[in-house]
Image 1: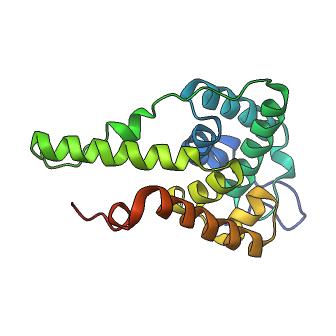
Image 2 (image 1 turned 180 degrees about the vertical axis):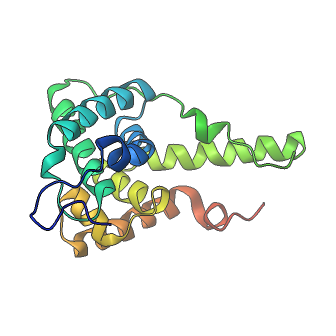
Length: 182
């Protein structure tokens, strides 16, 4: 999937065709960075405008990593201007997600409790740990892609992931991590 023709110019692919499929990932990443939907929407909107403005500079075959890098830079630019940390708002998609089958009310309550516990544990991680765990475990990005988005060496990605997982394990305990019932 190349985005440049042999002369080095932009192929006829449109911004919507190249970047559009990655807007959900951008919102998800922004949501975890900002910890609320409204700020995430603002960050993604600003990032999309920047991406559109610099669409001609997209190089390589990974528009998703390129867009998520812009989202990250947009968030940190905004966050440095804010005096207070963003408020915590419940993430609807995770706390109210239901599987296709219809479990009994007790199972639903246990599922919601577990989802809430995991969400709170992830949100309690320091920013540098939270962003790598979200990019790896929720967005399924490779170590190399995470390194590109966050702007750190791949070894640092692996180190942060290991430390983030250790903290999550300490917060959630081995039973929660394995998904075993009490």
